[in-house]
Image (cartoon, rainbow, N blue to C red):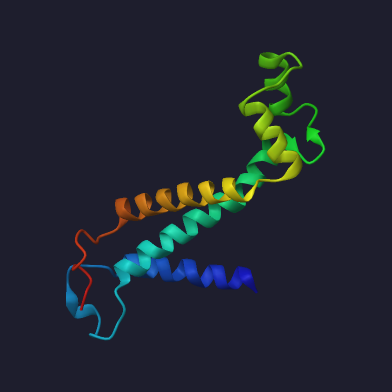
Length: 135
């Protein structure tokens, strides 16, 4: 069910950007401001993708619940640069892969993903000023 909701939400974002033009004749006065919907949606999707994607990315490069996966990119990095003793960023990634990503880190990932979503929306949107889509 959640997948269906996400698809509908993404469709709304795409449609909101496609019709967000300077011509106010597209929509009646009661229609919501599509530029705002697009911006809010882009921030939400960007944040969600960052929070959900981080654990997947960690596992993909070899930071798993059981530690560093043999033969992975993480194992090669550990062998090449740390020679068995890991510290700093590598240790933090190993811990995140094994124990999961903490709440504070998820907040930071969500904020960074939201900022990236907003920047992407601003780059592709036809809305140059707040009043462009207001009716």
